[in-house]
Length: 114
Length: 111
Image (cartoon, each protein chain N blue to C red):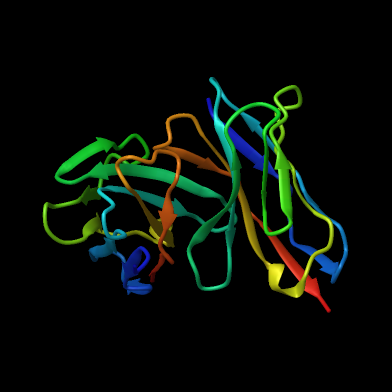
């Protein structure tokens, strides 16, 4: 059973470009969570999604950031018009519907904005 | 609000030394508490957890006790190994969906 997969592992973008980060949850997991880790800081919750639904987006910046988890395919975190302050590690986690409190993390995507 | 404060690193220990990484929390309700470990190039892995006051979580020789009176969940290990070198994150969750993490403590164990 493959773990949570994220790609790309490293992403470099210039200011103003778009960044798309992908997360494939573990098999059988229908809940996905996105976290951001800024340099010298802990992981900060961004958004919690179930298939085709955003459940909690209280940690998402109000502009330029969006997330989706379609019925088929991976979850996508999209950052439009990136700025240098978006440079961070973005982690995805997944959990099965029946087990709350247990999240399995992917290896993260490190975004660098030039 | 909810938050986690953990001991700043980096921490460097010799093999077989005793490890303590301090963690304190602030919560509005009755959270579950967790320690996650991140090895180089990998995602976070759950190390141990405790769901209520006075519970002790343990795994791979690591232990942490949920202390409500001191709002703490310190991580301990009696004898560290080189393979324990990693970054350790303390976290809490009230709902099981939203986690609050500390900043992480980097541990290096030298032979």
